[in-house]
Length: 194
Ligand SMILES: [Zn+2]
Image (cartoon, rainbow, N blue to C red; front, side):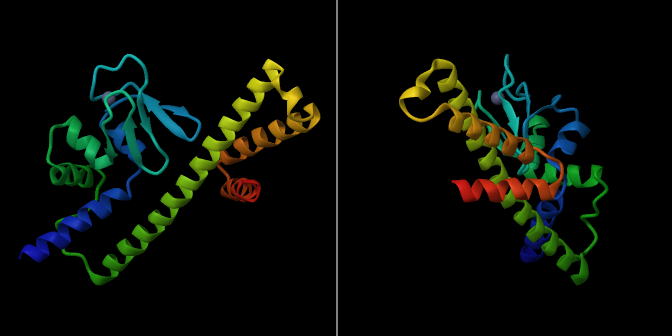
């Protein structure tokens, strides 16, 4: 009995993980998100936040840089509505029309495992895209700063630097594209360069 419950429990979390965290936040009116590059930001719904310290990442997790709380969609719903994790997962599953009480056939179990694998791959890709975006944005800011300060003269030629910053800005735009092919092209260029 215990093993069966455990299996069902795991499946609820796997099922709920497939739901986009932004949809969860919007559905329960937890907070009003604003798009910031590849992320979303808002004033933290957990602590008394005067600036938008609450960040939702493309990999489906969130973190508040004010109070330090972090987690995934289930963790957030559990915190906001003061629920156990399993209760939060059940509520989300119910509200998003996912059947959790029905015993799963081996076919749908396979499908869930495949989807979980696919999401894991997507999560890894998201992290790589995010890292490339962070690195390039920082480089663009640094180069622009040193150009403005005139500090470039000692190190390298101005034309080369301008070319680089243009190229990096272009890659940043591509990383933010909604077209997956353009994103991959930019990610590959980034990996070749760094
Ligand atoms: Zn907070």
